[in-house]
Length: 398
Ligand code: FEO
Image 1 (spheres, rainbow, N blue to C red):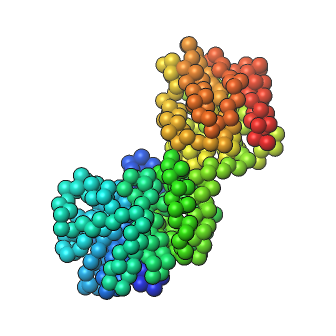
Image 2 (cartoon, protein in one colour):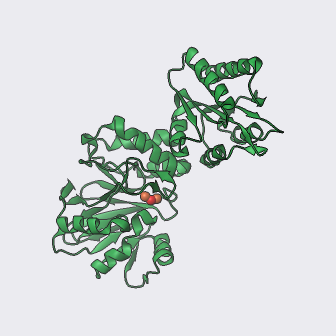
């Protein structure tokens, strides 16, 4: 029997922690784990909002039982169909055979496509803005397409003014002990929240801003996301944080990400970093793309205004570990960055030649056209050009 956790009045937390999985979506590192949040609203009808990951079903079921005893679940609201949540839908259906599923038309399509569920008698379809009264509880549903998937929606519990926001306003990191914002150290949690945002939903920043606008009319007293902290004291804080990330607000500081096989490109990276520090830039973060996962590099790039990318060439093309970061940056369509490019080659080039396409094709980048492409190893003149590049970054950041 696990602990019963009350979020507010008849709203309970029944989610689970995952400290086992190494990679979220089999791609993004989970050094600090992740939580799959789920909530149970009790009353004349018992309603679950968002199922937890099916891989953790026994612990999840224990949490339901700890809250509900031998009671039954009448409705399951499926706000989002990504399998980190929906993979327990069929398990819950077996456990509570009379339970109905609530979602929108696209949710229904996904339920049928992923799990081959015959939705004929079990699915209650809701539309954007529709309110359902389930026993003594009232819920209103709002579609939030592409935050994170096409079917994504959020649910507002009118009785307690609680927003069940699915992936929106979430973060990485298992919930160690308390689940609430007023009992967490935001200094610690901020990084894992930013990393989640930038890795998972950041590419849909426009849609996030649209969703925030749409929900602005609601009196939101508590935010219950599908991952990370439950916001009961300062829900506006996480809304404003997501807004600032979605608006690509950046602060003074520079990320240098480089790929280097034999230290020549690295030497240029260090020269640029040292110059930035001399020029008064207090926050300079240097990453070797062969050592640090792009998940972490992206989270830092999102934060800082300056970005300097350096790569050696590999078989007349971009160095493969840099290629991965390049691809991730390309699809995220970042804005408000000053971007400098440098690198080395031994034969006929390929590193810098490819890298320049990123800022050239992205109107959100202030591209420093004077790039540095060095044959084999940097000489004195090349080092001086690195110093000039760093100075130009500082100048443009002002
Ligand atoms: Fe937590 Fe997009 O799923």
